[in-house]
Image (cartoon, rainbow, N blue to C red; front, side, top):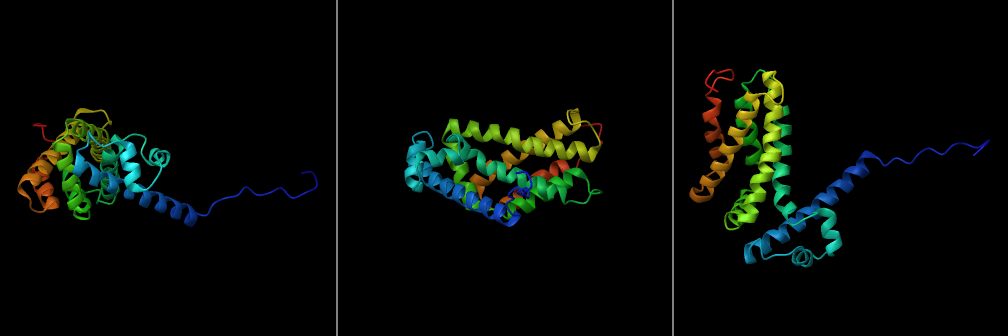
Length: 210
């Protein structure tokens, strides 16, 4: 307005933004928990988004605000883990062998998880081909990307070069196999993953055998 003082644009404080993000995360986790219970009781394929919304005490519209599809409930945990691993990898010493960084970053992230819920999600995916395909697909998209980005940076190579790509695929495949072994034999998941990834840790980063 002429002759007046221009209004400053309203800015939400970082604390308020974080509080909103925390509330949204807590609400999404509650929906995941309700879905997990239903999937265990009735199977992934038989449960609808409407069933989950009812169990969580929310409208179907609210459900879709958090999860565009039922499959996204399966993807949520994998994405959280991939993001946590990326953060843990960024904190590792730059002079540490790259596969050792991956080994211990994965160990530390998984050690902080609730493995009871991890086991429940694995059981659900093992009895539903549809759920299994979703879980495998999101692991390829998320975990391979995080590991590939880290390895290409640490090895000083292009992101699409052979070495970081194949090492990332190998590490992710080892993790999937270790999860399956753990689901049958039990034990400490973080330690089992660390021991499994030690196979790659033993390979020199520039080995001609890779």
